[in-house]
Length: 330
Image 1 (cartoon, one colour):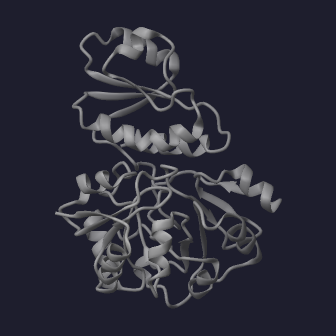
Image 2 (image 1 turned 135 degrees about the vertical axis):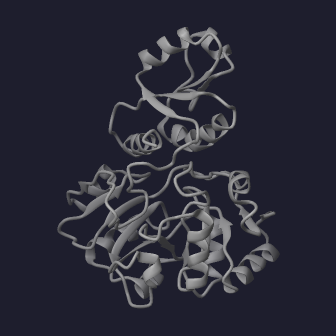
């Protein structure tokens, strides 16, 4: 069973040794916890796919410690340099032409690589101690709700790995924004995330195309399938009014109901099967709590989970709509 280790010089050295020995460990990031292995080592890469039960056609993101390291693994154009200078370290993944050193297992045999410099201080310190990048998809079985605590990882994968490096709760709580920058004249957002379309376009003065989820087998980056991030319990997205109507009909508490913010009605606050993602509807708080609450509710044997729809596409709400839509598409 995996050990959860707080970051110290000693435990970081243990993690470094494990990674240098082709082992796979769980690591904290500012987005979600990752299942990390040497991105240049096919033994480690195959272990990641096996542990997650992840299909080989789904590319991995490699994680590096600084912008300069990216030059070893990818060819950066002017638009990419502008974006990574602005948003790294941080929750932005860029897809660029790969260099020959990157194994085909990382990229699903494609000619591009997804690359990111995270800002979680524990993960960055580990990356700085290594001579290779880390592939680190979310540390959960493929398709399930991503983990945002070390305890989530232990519950899902604790019998399959030895080390979970604990960096406390993830700061953001949803996965990075992924942008395809292979053609700087036609940049595309493949997965919306914490860095919004508006933020990307404001910094670059370039229009970004927003791609939609797909069932195609050729994927440039992770998180693009129509069904993903799903609890075992069936999840349905409904309007606020429909949510309240269903609550009034649910006399036996067979269903879980999730609001974006704390409901005003006292009677609803007192029902044990009613939950909310934020006290006042703050988007960053909703994102931080989304996966944690879905995982909690998923363990409580409800017949269905009903969650309030997110109705606008401003900022990070685009990413939240994306995650909920995929979670409900199982």
